Amino acid sequence: MINKLEDMLNILKDIDDSDESEEDLEYEPISLDDFKKNIPQYTSQKLCELIAINRCFGSYKEQSIICMEELAARRIAGDDYNFEDYIDKAFGELPKLDFAIPDLRDVLRQVISGRNK
Image (cartoon, rainbow, N blue to C red; front, side, top):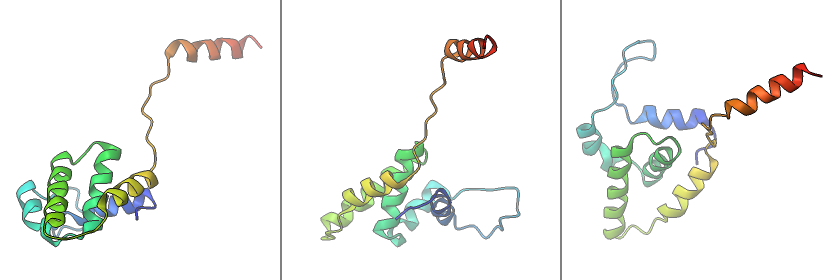
């Protein structure tokens, strides 16, 4: 299960099969076609974690769809893995991101009221 942001980033690195070291400044993620070819090699847990990452960050949408299709195909083939619960649990353990921008008027009121004290 994903416990830390670092674990989540390691999962994303795992889908890149390049031989480049981390010191290299240029980073090329795995292509969507290569991802599709490699998808049967991934465990159901890794597929679920990639879906949870998509739900958290809104990134890797195409890969997430491919993961869902693979999990559905595995279910049809007889795999009884409860991926729905695993995705929900993994998503629940990810940090909650809040990109809400505070109202500038409220910020200014707080600054002004702080000066008047």
